[in-house]
Image 1 (cartoon, rainbow, N blue to C red):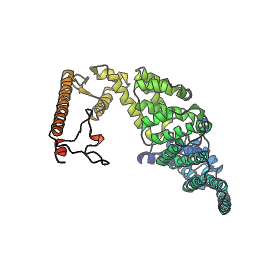
Image 2 (cartoon, rainbow, N blue to C red):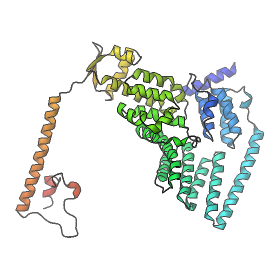
Image 3 (tube, helix red, strand yellow):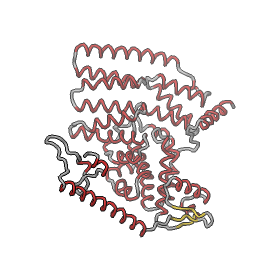
Image 4 (cartoon, rainbow, N blue to C red):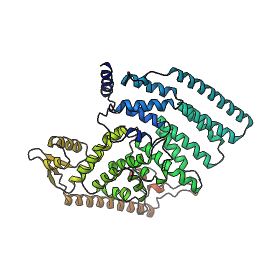
Length: 462
């Protein structure tokens, strides 16, 4: 009885600490899902699922335990054991294997000393290629044992010994992978931009371009720049395939790109830049529900679009890169749907809106009030008649206001031109000596070729 209570208390404590706990079962199969990934991200994703999903916690921990013992990262193994003891202390795998830990620790120490000794020998021989490869081997070793700062430093030291743009590209990609694990998104973007600016051969550029776009999109997603992230994911070439599975898969590209596009683009952009995008269509075929959701949004079938997204919310809350952004992405999509739904109407009943968005009148009213207060929706709520009415704009007044503004601007420009003519006629203009800049710079000249400086600034020069 103690174990179930401990299991429940663990997730209750996480909920109280504002950590995300997903109590509904996801649609994906855990084994099939994790098989798509390689490298350290497998263990990271399994630990996230174990700590976030009571339904999959034990299965994810068992898989994480096996994954940890296939590697050399003692600290991650201890994390798995610690989580196991909080969630399922009665399981045999919850007890640490000290024999394995001691053996791996000795192996890691021996391997580290060997690689450092070899690198020292390469430096004494002053062979650049050998030094570069020695740093690469040492960085890969540090990466495997979980020493990410050490791996980053070792890979960064390769820069001074790179002899071709391809070597620089390989170094930057390794720094990108390490920085993604460190969640150092500024470094990810910096190295992605370095790769873009390299003079690579066409074949090498075609190979690396999808990885660069995917990494850039991931960094922009993490920073909350959903429009930029969508553009980056949309530019990712399908040749990415399974070459970047240590970070993300083609399925992730479809999901991340589709959700970011839904949250940041209007219907016209979604149609032209997403659905009609022949390159991105290859990714959407891997996640057909995303394509259907975007199609429904473009067809103004907002309730069907939102229904599909809600059906997959659980899956996205268990994604290591998407988890923190699901709520905001869904809010943006829903707000856009409400705004787009209301555009053709001058007024609409709250009852019909509640039916259209599959909710209650009270809930839709609270949502509309929040949108109006934040300026997302230009409308008013008639609480007596239960209506949402558009704010009336006087088009005649707007035209008159624009005409008056244009007349004032024309009058101001005419006065400046007359003043300039009078100054020249009276011989009061001062010409700059040769080789010195004019008193009025090009940035201070308006469309008529005359200075924009005020009367005070002009007269102050004489």
